[in-house]
Length: 339
Ligand SMILES: Cc1cc2nc3c(=O)[nH]c(=O)nc-3n(C[C@H](O)[C@H](O)[C@H](O)COP(=O)(O)O)c2cc1C
Image 1: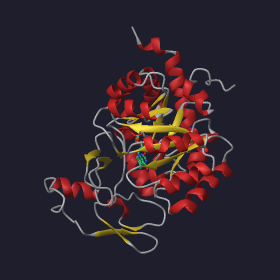
Image 2 (image 1 turned 120 degrees about the vertical axis):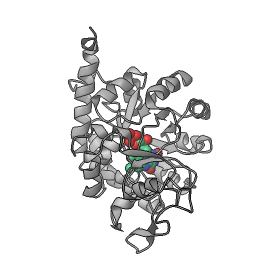
Image 3 (image 1 turned 30 degrees about the vertical axis):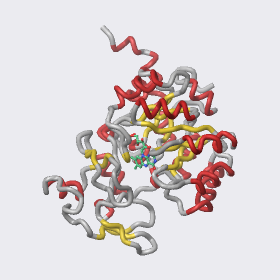
Image 4 (image 1 turned 90 degrees about the vertical axis):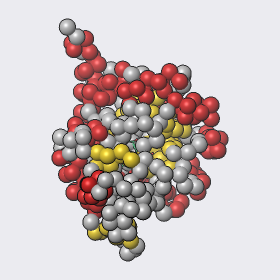
């Protein structure tokens, strides 16, 4: 048994068949099979987000690629903002261990997920949403605090949200997400009653993420106050809030007095193009990804407040090991912090 295994073992580990209760959060196109497999191989649970893959074939290929890189369990994530039946069916036919759903009602999908022998993890931003997920049959709830990078469901910070959700869904393991970027955050989340943690921004800054180096470098240089929460990158996903880095697009918008949609500076500009040549306008929801060209710095650079804790780029497996070591030591010596 690995030295820290017992110290950081939670009921979530037994449920998912993993050594450590550490997940890479779904981070859109930034987490490909290489990143997910590295996290799973290090004893955590790797996740790929398949919402943006082009149809069932692409989903199958991504899952098979993770399988080729690890024989450990891993999860897939789908955003319910868009119809996902076809992608979900492909995931279930491939026999994935865990389906993570976000931004919508899980109820219509629970039966199919369970019939296929998979577990359902529902991401929530509040207590009512967590209760609904439990009633609908979710096996795990991910509580996403307001500090989180990417699309953010609620407006409650992790410190207050996690224990409230833990109390609201007795018997269900809760995974904490939002602002957790080092072993101190992992230990704190477990003390709040979480059974696991999911880190997004920290893994965007890993060697295996698919983002351009420019994005990783900006994350390493950023402080915890360098993110903005709001609905600015609304094109392609309207009426949603997200947390991003204060990049050139955000700075122009802030300097213009945060004008409403339709009156924003540079609205209508093409800032980047996809591999097929199609244009990505300023304020579009797309994050920098392989195959995109243009002014990638001006795209939505999803990023949580924990970014100020990221000191450098590391391989994902090393990140998992460091989190386990640091959190394990802190929890073992927690009394050492008291007088
Ligand atoms: C680049 C990026 C992309 C994201 N894409 C997704 C996604 O596709 N699906 C999803 O459920 N959450 C997505 N999220 C939210 C994360 O799953 C998670 O809740 C968040 O990263 C946790 O906060 P942290 O970044 O402070 O660790 C994304 C977050 C980031 C940073």
